[in-house]
Image (cartoon, rainbow, N blue to C red; front, side, top):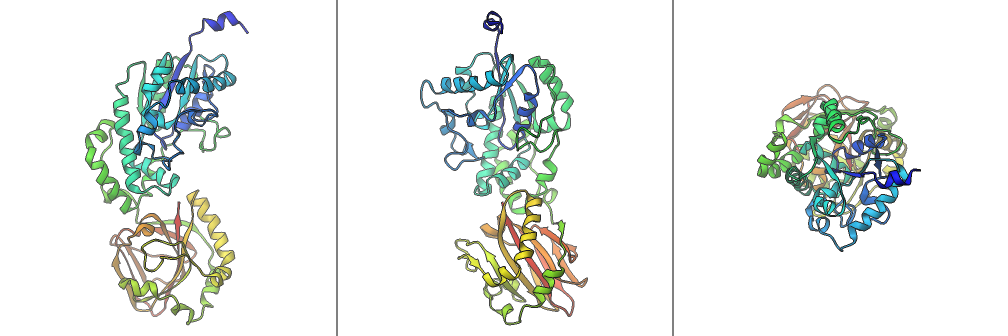
Length: 435
């Protein structure tokens, strides 16, 4: 190695200032393929020896801007020089001949001043993502965060990044949507501005578990469509307080009737064995759990069996955990198979409630919308066990026909109703899924 050559080499630092859940890992892994760029093994904040606060502490995972002072202040004079030292060890190990040293950690959107104080020859890439898509992604990543906290964090990120656009230096600004919808433009900007000629938006899926595809893809529509009416209403209350910031980035308030969903077909499931077991349930068992139809007038014509439910504080019906060992054993194999399919569909989470609900013949569940912490946040799914063409299911005044051997999710925070116009009882298994 030419020591004299190395001593004269100008090292440049490239920091990606990007909020969480906005594809920063994909960009990081794209830079990993460049000959002139040294990339850390993971986010800088997770490097062994890192001295500053991380987003996993203080119950602020994915919502760190709610406590900005924890991240934007330096605890000691040598803190960031220590970070520089630990990062340099890995940068030099991974690519000792690099011209650029690249780092990304979402909380760094709060501390570019600390980066500028510590590092030389600094450039920033400043990036944001559609606020509704970002919020949906956080809902799945941090199930303990309220939609209000998530909405405030998302808006904080857009506001902070708007200010960061005015940082001095050879910086580049683009959005997640730019990256996905016109990747050639982003690639050209990076190649030209930073003289990294071999940069391509393509990532190796083997290096990082968060990277699911080699090529860039816009997931916004898919993710926004998962938001329930309740989520959209709460997000709009927050986003409407800063429409100028949304407009700055090219985003706008989305109306409830423009996004979200009514009913989705999740996956097929053969109910043959499930149906046989349900039909074997005695009439006496159908009348043992009457709390639900007694507590909710709209369910007066239904009878339910609760197999399992997590406890929900303040709920008269489910204030304590319910675990019906007899029926959980009866349906054990069926629930195991269903759980695998739910995990495959939703990627993360758990079953939080299982009900069997029977609607009497020639009866109805009048129009209503569900509320409460559990029902606002869960993915409510229905598995038709006994049904027929004379059963009408309405969501948001639109009629749907639920068929056997298919599992459905519907937005229970929208107005919904059921009319059983037949001489037969209708039986569904209701499974609530929580991230």
